[in-house]
Image (cartoon, rainbow, N blue to C red):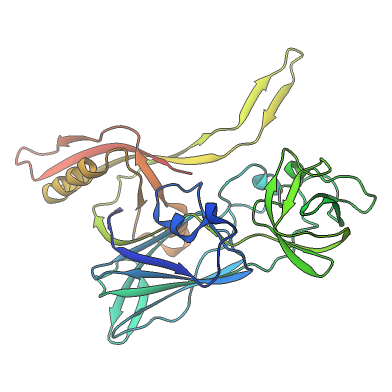
Length: 350
């Protein structure tokens, strides 16, 4: 297991501006995944400056169709290393009311000579510049969850209006599920971004764009480039959980039985939870206790397992931005006190 305990980022910048000040690049340095950076372009390079001592890098709340990460310090560079941009599932229903569609990702790097490479167990790097190159390119105007495909924009006044199908019927954007704040819409040959959606978007002026678009055919709708959390720094490395450790989920969907036996339901977000038991050396027990005392209710990046076969995809499946649900417990596992058992529960932040 690894816990990122000391964030060494000194600056973050983007080659693109933001959708609005609400979605500024500074958002990636706070602890609120739900307040992301949203770019005002279909591609951008996010530059992260990190002080000396980094051995782990973490991103969460990403939305892009493709991405790479590259590192550069005064003596070594890496090539472009692919970032996972595969959504949790190809099931269309997953998009419905889901805030984060792409898993988080944990990176470890090591330097050998003039090269920096990605590894399972990283080593400390000198002061480093990390560049995230992100692009969105997939047209989603005909990839609706329910209902008809988007065909046209119907202007109400100025920048407000709504999306319609080929017959002129309003598109319910909750059902459609692939139009969101920041979506890049090509209307009449020009690009606009969605900056506001009221309700389900079916009202005559329920959608606000970044500029005034007259009635015209919609030729493309692309996801925005979005990023929630970036952290890079020193990680606490302790033993893996014992076999049988549990991954669970907390589902915030609404379920309401109806008097006639039916079910009223509304899809909401799902969070990962881990119940961890591990045997640690006394040195690591003391370090972990210090980590808990420092963080308590504050969220932190972690990867719950490390060193497993690559097919387990632990860098995305078993990493996340977590907080302690309660205080961990410690028990001596032998009379000498050199080994202890710890137990704790962590809950994903979204």
